[in-house]
Image (cartoon, rainbow, N blue to C red; front, side, top):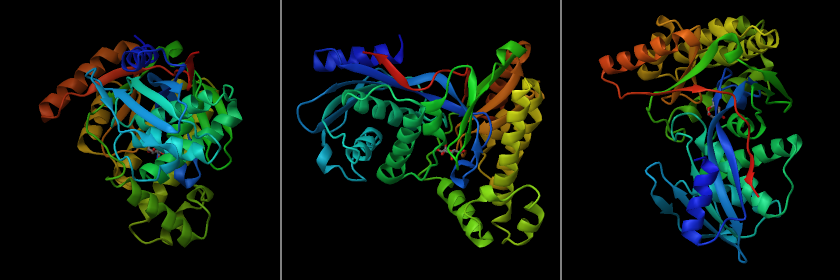
Length: 390
Ligand code: GLA
């Protein structure tokens, strides 16, 4: 059963009628380019086949009702909210994400009530952007109910910024725009090369399968929570460094500038800047290799990215390091943590013929270390958000 079917079915059980439509949005992995988005830099995500779907119908009033089907199949209903009375901080559960989107859309003239039923299979707290998937699917649903046509690319970029605002200002988590852009703008078979400063995008073909390769995702099941973690500290550190250096964002520092730049910075900020500047350069290098069809050659850049996040940005954790080191030792061409860090998921580029050996090595290493068993799956670059049913 697809996420859209699950959402439509649960909607019908709860409301006794079919929804007006179902919209869904995917989670993502970021191939490379971490913590570069809020520094105006480059990112390179692709969409996962895992999606969150929102089955929705309009209401005659200004009330938003929200319900979700959990992974255990149980229906959970949030308290109803009045759209004109929405304000940041309330509700503060999962319902903050759809409510936050309604709060932003209100400013753009969309403030009708709706019944929303959410279902899907994007793992939560796994660094795979379940929050952005929920925001983006909700935004498309509310805009669709308001009679707006399927958004084109320019409109998707605008909606991504609105969804980011919902997360930053309503939910109160200071993330960049990587996840929302990935969820809305990725297309199947490609990675999305995004220049966050200019908003320019390029769909870069990424067909690992054709090269006999696969991207293996290792969800360590260590929960990350950006609001409570060091995400905000890192973000503030890079903004402080940019201010000290007199640049608008760390994007403006080149690899060539780096040695003199690092000398000019206080000890605790220098490694943060080194990560962002070298990571931007690695994204560009990976894109150039992929444009030339050299998928297998990106491995060392993935490895270098992980080392940079582990040692300079200091956002890894023992489980992520173990997943990455074990994957490499078992034959992966490259591996790195993906997403915000402090838990969540790692990715590994592996030959298809090595997949089972890599998976077995990771499971065994986690067991030996006394860690919870990770969840492993192969990620295929999948379509971005859209309407599933009329
Ligand atoms: C999280 C945030 C993104 C981005 C990544 C790190 O996923 O939501 O905006 O900063 O972390 O690259």
